[in-house]
Amino acid sequence: MEYGWKNRGGFMYLNKELVIAKNSEKTIKILPNMLNRHGIITGATGTGKTISVKVLAETLSNAGIPVFITDVKGDVASICEEGEMNESISKRVEKLDLENFNVSSFPTRFFDVYGKTGHKVRARIDSFKASLLSRILELSDSQTGNLNIALKVAEDENLPVYNFVDLKDLLKYVMDNKDKYNSYGNITTQSIQTILRKLLEFENTDADIFFGEPELNLSDLCTYEGSTGRGIINILDSTELVKDYNLYSTLMLWLLNKIYDTFPEVGDLDKPKLVLFIDEAHLLFDDMNSSMLKKFTQIIKLIRSKGVGVFLISQSPSDIPEDILSQLGNRIQHNLKAYTPKELKSVKVAASSFRENPNLDTEKSIIELSTGEALVAFINELGQPEIVERAFILPPQSKIGVVDENVRRKIINLSNLRIKYDIDVDSISTHELLSKLKKEEPKKEEKKKKNQKSKTEKLIDRTINTATSTITRRVINKLFKGLFK
Image 1 (cartoon, helix red, strand yellow):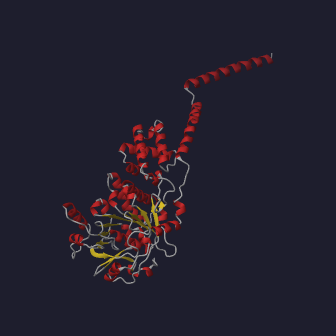
Image 2: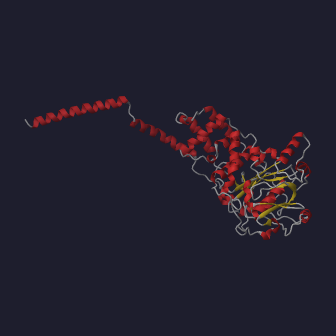
Image 3: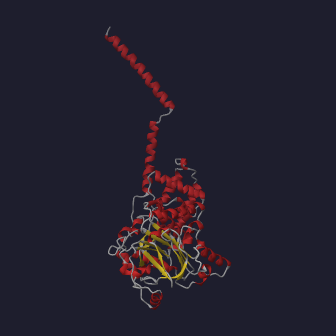
């Protein structure tokens, strides 16, 4: 498939390989069909991770690949604005001998859980797993079990649970009718009351705004600019969200799980349908229990068959569990500081994660790297990691720095997603359905009683019927005898 974007940056395109970095000897390229082998971008603060993310996102967008990025520091959103050919960029272009380099803006959409700096992002409570909800609410195993029972009751009774109001009503209903649902498991009033208290605490942080309708349709992340075919870059403003690290990490886990559950199997594609860049990735694994880690590892392994690539961004590879790290084939490592034994250990872990280059001291290079320079190794056409190379990441074509808020607002106002997501939907509530269910239950019970007479009542009925039949027969016989005398 032709990408049709060579005129917007020919230096990035060589035989359907995407150029990301260069050194004096080699041009470092990443293969589009290997992006679903996932990746990792690591390095200390201020060493160039954001630039690497922007260059990758720009290159993928130009290649017709949609992108999703969590913007934790607020310095990725400016990808929507054209860059400036200043002295710093000019020197990098000249140093790397980049032909046909030109500055550019990129097609961008903005999202924000709080609805202030982008389209609202919501999820329905009943699309969450109990394990993810319990992570947000910090529930015990027993409380998680009771939450799971409540959600199962909602599923069986066809009760939609969109938001925290619905969930609270559901929990109260299950608690009041625990004898009715004891076949589901051990329902305890104490556990339900604790969950309700946790919900109240969570609501006081305003983070409950994430739960409701309309839920984010993930197909809206896999879209293209109509006039050029470039992939849309979806930016989730996470500058405030990441302060609630529990909600941030759970949202990312929900997103990956939702993709895994809903995207169809497509096998290996020429290029992925979507590539996600998740910053502060270590937050995903803080306090993650063994069963959830096992599930997440399975998702990372299998999500590539859905045509999706995932890049995790953190300070050190040691932030990522080994089972996950082994699935991240495409790697960019920026400078790491190493003054303490713990920091030196992180450098060793980072160096050991690369395929060795006999002409390069990987461990030493990690400490020596300058800003914008990195150790880079991508997956080759055989699905194997290339040997590590020391190189400079290409300069971004878009603006470096924070976005002009007037530009951001204009993009949001002109987006066709504004009507879809920025207006709250007030669907029929669980409260209404439960009220109706409560009203119907006495009627059902009364009808049931009428249809289920006791043994004594049935015996009396049979006796009366038998007696009535006997008397009736005697009366008829007497009548007949009188007629024929």
